[in-house]
Length: 252
Ligand SMILES: NC(=O)c1ccc[n+]([C@@H]2O[C@H](COP(=O)([O-])OP(=O)(O)OC[C@H]3O[C@@H](n4cnc5c(N)ncnc54)[C@H](O)[C@@H]3O)[C@@H](O)[C@H]2O)c1
Image 1 (tube, rainbow, N blue to C red):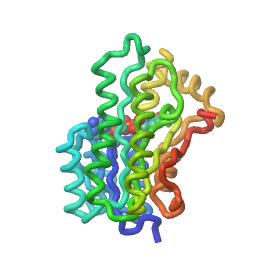
Image 2: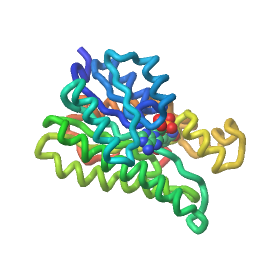
Image 3: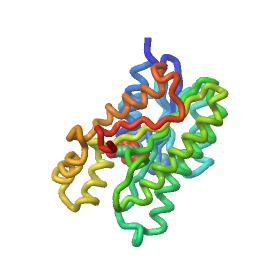
Image 4: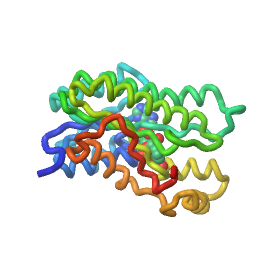
């Protein structure tokens, strides 16, 4: 018996590092997964790995309502419903102080995270039976912040507001809504941020970040997927409206 036997999940940014780790974990627990992401090459690679039997791959721009609706309807026509949503698509934006942060870049980061998660939740809810679960991927900097990341940290904080609002709106249907707050993950997304923030090569930049993490290392994508699986599964049945921190102690 898997924890998610015969269930259906939609994962945005599903072709990325955390998205794929979560897709693998969900499939291992008996779930079928619809991966919605903007990278055609990434989706093609995901398809080669996961195959068509338990997974579906839809090119989706989460900032575009028509595109989100199309991804939801494709999953629903194939499997009839969505039990779990993992709103996970994200971009880092540039690193710059507020005084010189580019306006259009700020808008782009807000659009992918905030508008994207809003649209994903909005257009998935009609396909979600009572008892569904929504997990939104925020960040440790959805609860703290650092210089240079105004757009990203503002967007990640905003996701907590979306989560808390939605948790209250859908609780009467026993739908649970939570955010996760990962610390630095050992993947390309984070390495690019670290190089931009420190100006050092990737391995030295990673060491600088390790020094800020009490556990002295980055998370693996699988450790983040395990937290998402926990919030999607029956073990978290009395958790809604909460912020689950998975950051090696970075925010303490
Ligand atoms: N990597 C980290 O250290 C870290 C830490 C905390 C939170 N996060 C968050 O985890 C999530 C996943 O990031 P990741 O580390 O797997 O990086 P990633 O770049 O591998 O994954 C991000 C995914 O989002 C997709 N995406 C970007 N814009 C999109 C759009 N407009 N529509 C649909 N899909 C789009 C990308 O194609 C990619 O597949 C992001 O929300 C990120 O902010 C990452």
